Image (tube, rainbow, N blue to C red; front, side, top):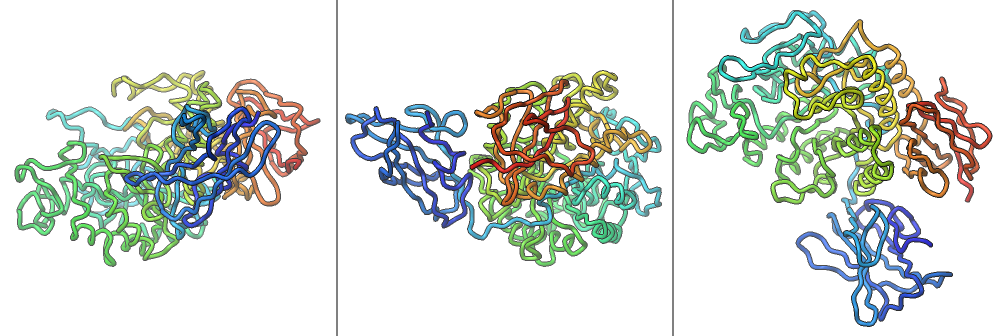
Length: 628
């Protein structure tokens, strides 16, 4: 028996997922014949802070086991809408709400979500179908170039690959002031290597002058940190990267500055008069003092990171004005910005930031750090509007990451499918095609450790610092990492490799996930695997914008060791099978007209005699046109 309602089926909801403003969408439900409503059902829609709206449904057909009702809705208002269906029978009101992620059930479940985004919303094309590579600048590659004006209070390491310092000093402070010397010139020297990986975009963790190696405590927004090079070096990197077909995205840290900065100047390092030094400072209004000067609002209470008032007119103009920070770095060649802690940037600031970036060029990208579903996120009691067309182009896709890791570690395959499809369904299509998909970043343990090693939760820094995988753990982690890479390369969005993951670099949480790239000690077999993924990604046009549909565990394919999904196109659909187990999996009697995808070299799986064979921890790709 068919479901009463199913948001994944175009026969029930005429547009899959989010809808563009002013599009007309048709809702259809199928009520069993043993239900006799007093009146035709209604669709009940509402937005946060607005009254419910009732859409009368019309009976459109009688089928063998049900009556079919339908209603149309013109999506005029950009917002996150919620809806359900309702009818009365013998005077008793009943509801049809969401269960099993996407199906309707009578008198059970939660509200359905409908995201309506701006009719003008577009996202830059250069990311779509590409591959991103995230670099923590101090730890990727050291050119050996001598840099001037490096502060004398920094600890300069000469043991590339050593364990980052993590223990507090005699005053209990961890200053993150050890530097291994990775620089912009070093990145430039490895552009050919990145091209071989298929990389089309580099995302750099912060490069602005700062006095800790992570550089999230900005000291001067208008200068490259001296140990990385100069502003001219950044401009040269962007120009050289363009020759390889690679763009460069910067990390924008705009919710706070460093206390040790031009603007706050708590320690008197700079000649400027900082907000800490005088209420007459031109930067004083940027900050919120509780008891001047030593008590002030700081990011998560960390006094080295004083919060800024983002909507202060002078600060907003400094960042977003025509001569501001954004336009300056875009003019130097930056392709856009990843926004640190986007949850802590107020809506008006994000609106202004987008206007500024898009005024410079519609092709520049804005990616937000959001750890949850960004379509319905609430932060500090405010319903966020990240993806309605007025703020972000994309977000870091942490929900995907958690779904992938959980599935590969033995989680329920249905939960995996639901987690992926919820994001695909809730986000606007322009965002979906630009999502930053990853399994590791600078803020979380490396995936190879999470997949192959011990759980580090609750473990001390001492435990994590010199904890390396055994040979057996490494092999297991590597095998599952391959499957993870295949998933993020083939699912919707843009795969993002955290530097060194492709080389087998290990590391638990910060700062051990920020070790130096192991030049000369790479896992070359793993690198070749990732290179081949890049080649395959370039060969399949559907990976740029093709719609996704999971064929696993439906009436055709049942094997919970394998994730199987299509990426659909106008001329040809591709079906991807990724195996999380150590056994070859065979899936027989697929009732489609299928055609072997012959161009994959090397071939990691095969399709013979109507049977798909998926190698251990591997993948098989076939192309197909389903029989209508």
